[in-house]
Length: 390
Image (tube, rainbow, N blue to C red):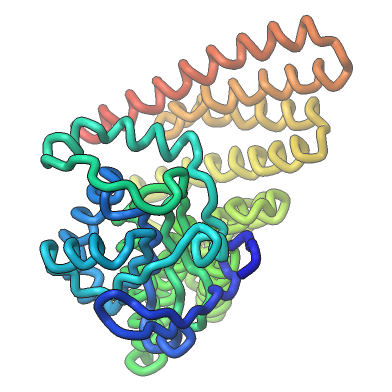
């Protein structure tokens, strides 16, 4: 098997191998029947691997309930593997491999510094569970990892390092929820308002899954859902729904790195919210929407600033950040964000000085920027904490 760098969206390398406890496992035959959670452990004697195994066994019923299937890869030999299988009552297939086989095929080679640091961080938890280092097996430097294989055979989730069971289960649950929601839209909904509400929810699910997995195609599906909302809402004159959908589209384009498109959608959202004010009688709601319109103008400018930053037009980016900062400061519900974008305006100035090779001045500005970002993050955390308990 050759070395590969596996990316989200790639087809999973298939294999046909004998397992310790479930006969021959043919991945190609399993694909399409259910989502597959492919876990690359190190070896059963490794404390980090034992810690991961305990977490996995505790959540195994949830994975089964959501329709996932686990395939567990290990460097351990038959004797020790069977001891653990029997002792821990492991029901999922345990498959032997080596660093030059499946691990390498899935791009798992030498463990990173971050992997060892995380193991050190969990040292007390591991000791508290009575886990000890047992017999060494395989390559001691082997990196662990996990992959979620979708029903079309593509990689929907990947992580190098120790098991992050929460992220995997969230990914699986979002995938199941999306399928159920699509079935609901296709078979159960008739009224336009229900279609709009359901498409918004579907868009949110795609967006959340796309953010979690980093899968561009999933974010693009979120975009398609929100575009349906815009189309259906405009047909019916539901300006508020259209405006919200434009705002959601701006968020998606931001995630995709399409900052000028995002800026355009924020402007569309502003103009459509203005139209919605004509049909709103409640003054408090009107005030909230008026503030929202100004807030979206700030974000229109922020997205432009990001675009100019990428083009290395730092002074233009600084100008947009500064203008956005002024708007945010005058909005009581959003002014806690102002200091963060004020810090960004300073960073743009530092970047421009560096570009002009004025390095001494640039260094001084970078140092000031660092302090500004620290203070802004503290302000945001304080605001969120106070809001939580208010």
